[in-house]
Each structure stands twice: as structure tokens, then as C-alpha cells.
Length: 271
Length: 276
Image 1 (spheres, each protein chain N blue to C red):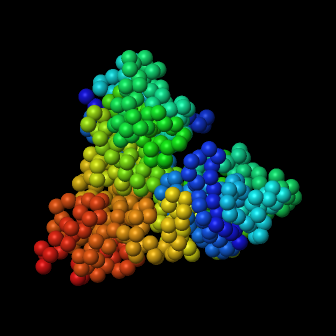
Image 2 (tube, chains in turn blue, cyan):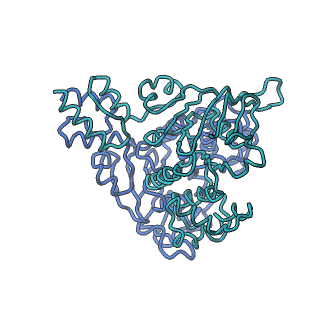
Image 3 (spheres, chains in turn purple, cyan):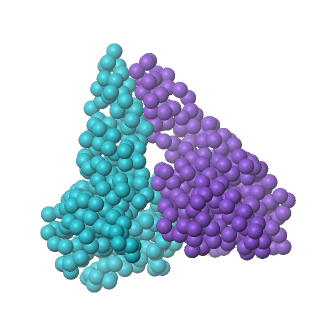
């Protein structure tokens, strides 16, 4: 389990703390979503999760190991994979399989074992058959899935994904979301940082950060059913959810949650 | 006279005999006051079209003119500004004012700092407040607008932007859209994006590219009248628009289709009352 305990962080020279008193844990096989506007501390929290940063107060532990303990930093990073927003910044290989093999090679894993891991990792993200492809010839969504495969080849227990869909078109976005869901079902604990509530409607838990503190801690449904609250928190709900809410106030019986365009139109004509 | 592309094609040389045709027979016209949205999925040719319009690539077929002359010509210099994806990664100066003034200073304009301040004001970054600040300490939306100001400061008549709202939160996207809307008073704006939904209320013209060719080209009313070609290009109308089109299809009278949830709700409730 990745455990953030009352975590605070202040960047050197900064006047205000980037994070203060944040507690959350990510269990294997669970998906925790982290939302909040730009500058709310989401990326800082993500970086604290695999010891890229170390908290200035409180504690972050990964399966009991403290990220502030330099002696276990590599054990922690082997357990916690990290994916960032821009796929271009995280690809090192000249062909896909080389890129995915980079991590385990560095760990001294045997070539035979690397072969198995690379093929499995590419398959897990839907890139089987892409072994010999050059990364720069891939679409952005494929590149991001390649980056995820690179993290998977390390056989992590947890994956932290910092806005992994921000740069992608709708097709790339849905493929990456599918790949992340696949990991969860294989028992990987996922912390998914995003601006888009639509990306994480099936999350086990949603945390909304605001100016470095936890402003909401609950389920996706809790945000969808209370649009006024979500907007207050700086979370953008899709326009059709706001429309559905306004229509409900006007006496139209629109189904709760995330109704489709067809369901809303149907409700309008029926009532 | 507009920024005009007529039947433009472009093929990337790959070393193989045939090459890859990225843009095929595309025409577009941009006047001051226009907001032209070029939409398409990854690999549809939209970024290549942007580079062609900016004069960074020379078309293999067809022609491009800026107010009547070729975009690569010396006299056309400064007429077009291009804002690439994530432009804020190109900040380098100690203050935002000095960063934005870099372009006009290079063009030897008489008052680069004044140009910078006017550009900052145009993107709603108060020059007195933001000018002296470090560009590296800005929020995502502020940084994006600051970088767009860097392009505006050159005094271009045409502003071309690649995914100007990608990666921004709701507040940042609203601020960028407002800045672009204001900029139309003095420029023609072209936005290239894989997610055109948020620009549909403002667009004067929409072009959907698929496989390098034009799948749809027309106004927003024409798009809403028959979205099939647009959807065939792998693009989706926003669900809130589809609700209104479905309602129209069922005989409800809606004077206009909007992305604004409150306005749409009012119109739908009124139309529903009227139809009974």
C-alpha cells in the first residue's frame, strides 16, 4: 500500500506550502483519482508517491518503506511506476521493445526474463506486434501506452499516472484509460491525476485538492450528483451534466448521474 | 485580403518512391475577425496544414497567399504568428515582459516593451502586475496566455495556434478562449485541435480533416444541420449539442444551439412548454 500520512510539502524558496495535511492511501487493485485545478498540488503529491520528492512534513510509505529513507529509494521506485503528461519526455529507446526493456535492463534482469516482460508489457497496453516500431512513428496515444509498458516491465505494484491523457486525442485517451483499467484488474494500485472527472468515473475513491489541501474526499458519484459543489471545487463537469441538472430543476425527470444525450432528449420528450 | 489556401497538398518525403501525402487538396480562407477551427484526429494532417499556412512548409500543390503574397516572402514576414503546442516551455527570460518583448525587439520595433504590454493586456494579463513577474512562476492558464502574448506582440494579422487549450484546467481554458475571442477584433485566428468542442460556439468556420483531406468544411449551422461527415472523420459533437439536435429532430423549436448549459436548459424548457 502507498500511504500518504498527513503530508506537507514546501518548495525551497516558496512562500506558501504546495501541500498541507494530505492523507490518502492506494491499495493494490484500487484506482484512486486525484483531481484539482492547475497549481492545487496534484503533481507534487504524485511526485511524493515514488520518492521523486520527499515530504517536508508527515510521511509517505510504500509497503512500509519510508520515501525519506535514502537506503530504500530504489526499492520504492521499483515498486511504484510513474507516467507523466507528455509521452515525448519519457521515451528513450530507438525502437519500442528497447524502450520497454530500458528499466529492467538497468535492474540487471536476465535477457530471457526481459524478453518475457517486454512482450507481456506491450500486450497489456494493446501494443502487441509493435516491438520493432520506432517510437517517433507512433501516435501520441500509442507513445503514452508505450511509456506505460515501460513502467509495467518493472513489474510495479503501483502506478502513478500524472495527467496521462492531457495531450491525447479522444481515441488515444480512451486507449490509455483502457490500459490503466487493465492494470487495476491485474492487481496494480493506480493513482490517476487528472483534470477530467469523466476519465475517472469508475474510480474507487476521488480526492480533490484545492490550494494544497484536501477539499473533497469521496466517490465520483458524490461529485456528479452535486454539480454546485463540484464547480466550487474547480472541477469542470461536462456541459450535459449541468444541462441535466438545470432540466431537473425545471421539472424534467432526467436520470441521475451521467445521462447520455439520448437519455436527456428522451426525458424531455416524455415528461 | 485574407490568408488564403487554395487546393493545397503536401507530401512528406520518406526516402521511398511514393512518400506520405499528409495534406490533400485543402482550401481555407481566413479574414480578420474570423475564428477558423481545424479539427481532426491524430494524423489527420491538421498540424501540417498549420505549418503550410504559416509558410514553414511549401505546398507541393495548390497555393497559399497572405494578403495576396506568398507567406515565405520577405514582405509577408510578421503577418503571421504561430503558437505551437505547450508554448510556455519556450520561456527563457527573467520577466514575462522581457520574454514577450523578445520578438518585437528582434524585429527592431521602436518600442518592444510597449508592444509586450499591449499584448499582455490583450490576453488579460494586467501588464503592471504580470510584466515584472517570472514567467516560470505562473499558473498553467497564465503561462499559456503569456506565451500567446509573445506571438501577439509581433503585431501579426493572422494568429495560428496548435492545441491552445491542451492540458489546461477549466479556468485556464476559459481564459484562453476569452483572449482569442478578444484578439479577433484585430486578427484572423486559426485554431487547430483534436478536441474542437469548446470552440464551436465561437467558430466562424469549421474544417474537419481526415486522412489529409477535407471531410467537412462549413459554418457551425451547416455542421449542426448535418454532422454525418464530421462524425465520419472520427470527431464527435459535444453531447449537449446532440441533446439539442435530438430535441429539434423531435419537433422542438430551438432558435439556436449552444454549449452553454443554462441557456440550453432555458431554451429546451421553453420549447417543451410551447409544444404542449
